[in-house]
Image (cartoon, rainbow, N blue to C red; front, side, top):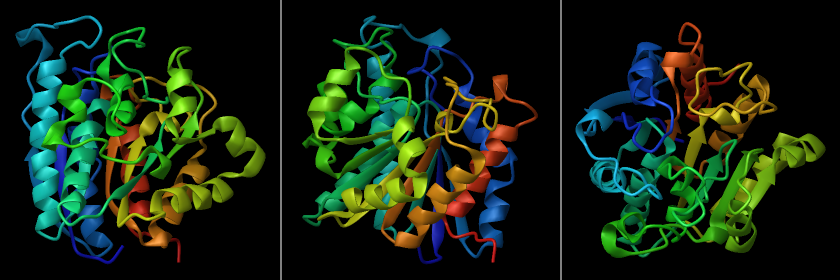
Length: 304
């Protein structure tokens, strides 16, 4: 990615999650010196602040199949506009979550930018979870388990139809990497969707380098660019303990950096987001510090 201006947008949303705390994720990542470290590797930084988010104590929970859905739609819609405007200004959007439901807004904004020019995007989604539930299949009603489904046109129309077109991404241009916790009924969506899913077993057997190369081919085939959505719970909890929904047996520290470096090398990434940092259960902000390291690797920092 050529050096230019990074537009940092915070999305301190935790309405989509079952555990509180990820609303403080954007602050934790900023406290870990994100802005200055981006400047140190040659970027200009435009920190655009945070999108507006209501607090769960001040708003009704709503239907149990998709809790806080109207409020999440409002936040995702504002985030989509911010991302779209940043790309239109020639900036690279870097969105800081918040829970993973914010990805519906980020991807909508990126897709709209390219859709306006008759082009489409790919998507690389790195996560311990498939995030492909819908209100009909979700065992919890937590919307942060549904965003990838929404991006490929499944799920609540209030989310899938932001900007009045769906899907935002053709599922055949989506690579889902690192999954190891998938709900029983969610499996059907993953298997029938056309999304290419790489489980932790695939990573163990083939190596992450080979999988990243295939993922880039999938996300780049016929597309103008791809968006990266990184859930910090993809990394093993030994390295990233402060995440919304930790799952043992994840990507190692070095594998995570390899993934980011490989994505940067290909030169096809348009934007990225990092989500589910939860400082409430973190250890001296080490997960946020790792998030900053991975962002830097994705944006060009190298050993030599």
